[in-house]
Figure 1 (spheres, rainbow, N blue to C red):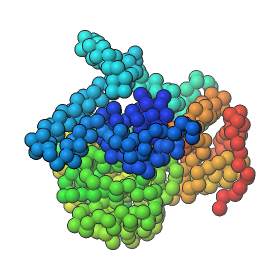
Figure 2: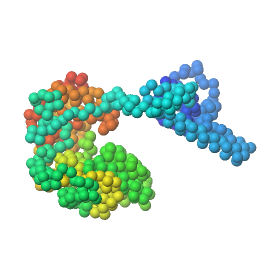
Figure 3: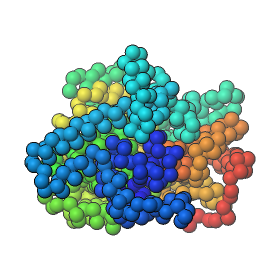
Figure 4: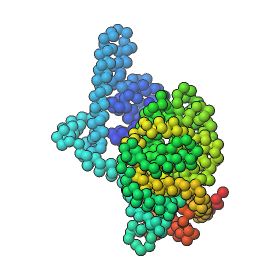
Length: 557
């Protein structure tokens, strides 16, 4: 066990935090969990503990490092080790020792489960029975047997932990107004409408008349719901037409609709991972939670490469046997940082090692490319052809709801036939599919919305940099404002809402890592110069009021 690993272990164990590092090593042998790693303590680690100790030179340990190492060995394994070294012990004695060792491990596992319950129930004893008297544990067991598990107490403690670290989420009641986009009803019941600056309805297509008319017509013709799964009554003409349109948009031979892109990513990756023999997935470190869940659910071998790091990707791929099927999973536009992936280069490296590529274009479809096909389309047909699987959403730039994959007809048919997230889910309502179809077709032809959005993003970025507001550098349409503190980030959002009738949601853990909290701003084509001036003035005011620093003014490159 390394010095850093022990420090990490100590910081997470509620029973060891009050002990210094040297004392932790001495106690570790009594802990059934830590002892698995501490059983083979090396001399250099023991020496590092000596150096980190606050004990003065006048209080040197009386035992030598070798003697201390033997004292710190796992109490369960030490007997087996001694027996193994004793040439006179019989094979029978060794077997008895190993049986005893396995029994102790089983007991340790049961005790650890009980300790976990103790730590998560208010009022439970806070003493570790392996380091101290186990009387509290026995009492706790007796109480649990009589009263049963305290579910609400457990849930309340988990919620309180969220509130304490400022990651507890409060949903603002934002009722957007289609006829007054990008405004919403004021949740504070004021006459002035709320200016929304953080919507993923990037182009305002949710209130586009072409989309609304298509939805109205389908609603009148087919009713509100689809009636079932695609296999049972829930497959209509709008589903087929929309899938054909999406396949055409991405220059693929097949496409498949899902209820959301979270479900599309999860279902597709998990299904591929479970069915491809010895599948290995190589995932970008900044991938969305939906992709992470899909990889976890696939239960296959996985590797993580640094965000957009081509050298790290190739290093990992080069070490995987050629016969194993491999999937490189990444996003084209990362939703929080706004970074854009080097799609062509990733695809070239993947093909070099016979891997297929899975590209999430959720924040790019409708936004980039001459027809709204995403970043891959914007780079040219040759790049679009190199991406094996493209996933997208109908709920952001297209303004409706739903998700999809586009790939070869054989891969799509395989997912259609094996993915539980597709097979056992009620299909999208006909009105939704009709609206999405209208939106995709509209944005294939219209450049006006994309051009207006690009103009406003550039203008706002320039003004923020001139003001000295710290931004996460990104070439895309998302403008992340650095804050770096969960409580302050939430207060900025609350102040903008309550004092200035402006809504920008704070982004905290787990959406971003702790220490990287931000305000995520997404201008649309309908954010006028007047709205922009009001936003900039309000942001400058709350920034000062919360004691945040400004950077030296700079210009947009």
